[in-house]
Length: 105
Image 1 (cartoon, rainbow, N blue to C red):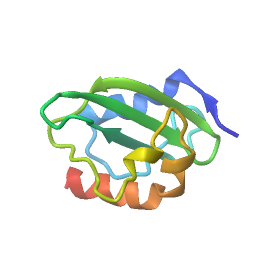
Image 2: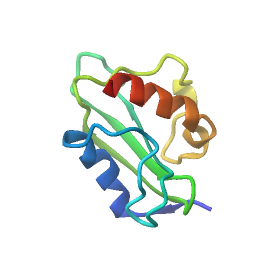
Image 3: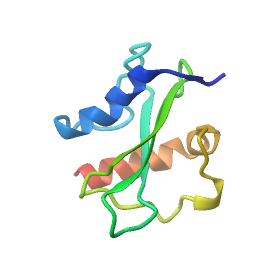
Image 4: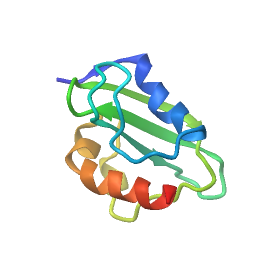
């Protein structure tokens, strides 16, 4: 079901200028099923890992990036289950969206 798609990086890039809620419009298919999860393994570091994915078309991206200062790692995410795929985050996407929306205010 999942396929890598570089366009999904746009979901992360939109965080710099769009404060709208998640889920957002998917840059691959246009459906409002795009999600983002960021994880900073060392809280003192600005760098971390980003997962963006669409629950509708199955497009996703996984990459290293500078994590926005306002982001806080969600306590409900099991860090041991995070890998390069989005199966685990997709299973908790509603909670992740709620968390991102709370942080975005």
